[in-house]
Length: 171
Picture 1 (cartoon, rainbow, N blue to C red):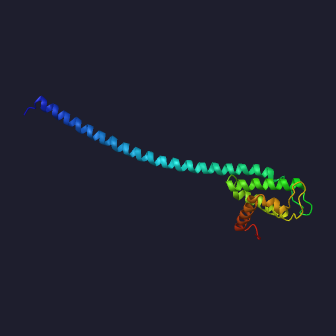
Picture 2: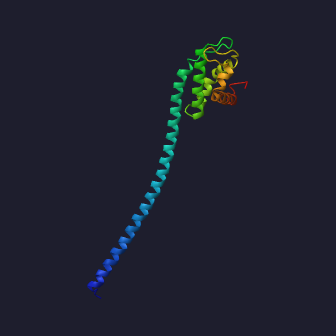
Picture 3: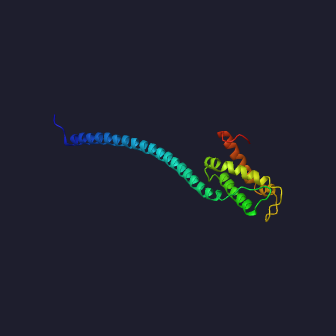
């Protein structure tokens, strides 16, 4: 039995087609595996970027804390019976900056509550007790603080935070 040239060509074409089919199928399977791996790596990369973004934001909030600290250490205690204008202004301006930073989430709240909380609370109380008109300001301590509602709101949050941690016994 002898094969005709056309039969031989047909067999060779069939073998080449079968080889091409199996090769293409193997390449397709590898491509699907690579696509799955790429999707998996994309998810992992996204999760890593999210974590790094959160870590960077936390680091930035902590760096900003040092800026607030530099201003906070210049605040003096207030004598409610004889308040000094510059001391009251500096305290109110610094506490307003801390309050706005707290509310905007640009400062690490835990660090701020721990570091500023006790003194923030004491000096706010001292300003509240100023019953006389603060020279150069023209208002009593309560009036000055009422002009800055963020200070009172954050003071309450700081005290609540400190109570939760057990670092304060009074509201």
